[in-house]
Image (tube, rainbow, N blue to C red; front, top):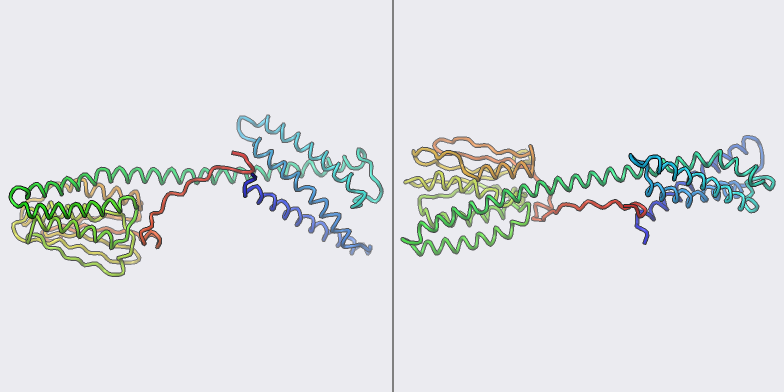
Length: 375
């Protein structure tokens, strides 16, 4: 069954040749008017439109052959020979068309001779037009293939970025799970009740994290809800030693962020600062819109005079890699000391509204080249 593109080409040919015929009819009528000759619009239109409409199937035939015998490196001689034969065939068919319809359309004032009148004129005019059609077919063909290659390259780039994100998540999720289980192991022998509460909280957290793991973006409100569950688990373990402050602007709750973006940053604050304190410490989580961008901050009070643990493990490394893969240079992550603690700041560009609502935008599949049945 002919493809929709095939029918569009037929329509484009018909419209194009009709416009060409109307232009010739207008010029012919103007010429008669300047010479003071009487003319009939019906005859002028029929002469030009019927002649041009005869080109539609012939031009489509040349397009069809050009799609199957495209002039490209390695096939130049073969393709040129086939297309030249096609152009010669069009010249002959065009001559038959004119000669057969002339008794009704009257292109010639007297009955023409096929070999001495019609064929020479057809060779003179239609051989050039045939190659113009072949050239136009090749231009459209190369344009289509260029866009197909661009779509394919974009798909490969998106697949590469997704593979990188999957690899990062494959490292990050076990890291989080290991730390949570480690915290439970510390309590299971001397405080089974709190350990049980942590296991229940961990189960709920993992269930929510699995729900969001298949999406590239989630609304910030979902990310904060998930983060609150994680902090509840740590609160069971650390008790009053850990205080949490939320400073989140309402207008940014629907902005899209990568899932589990803040969790490793808060985990760093808990593990490297709050958990090492003897006095109560605070983790502050902030979010707001500044200059059209989303700013996220995670700040802690430090380790209460203890020496800092070198590095922050996989959390910051994975977060930097995710931001680079998703946003490129449009996002940033910075770390700065604040008194005795540390502040990690993220700047993220805002993405589309459909994604902000939680829609998982999949990679568009590159369409296979299918032009008049050619692949």
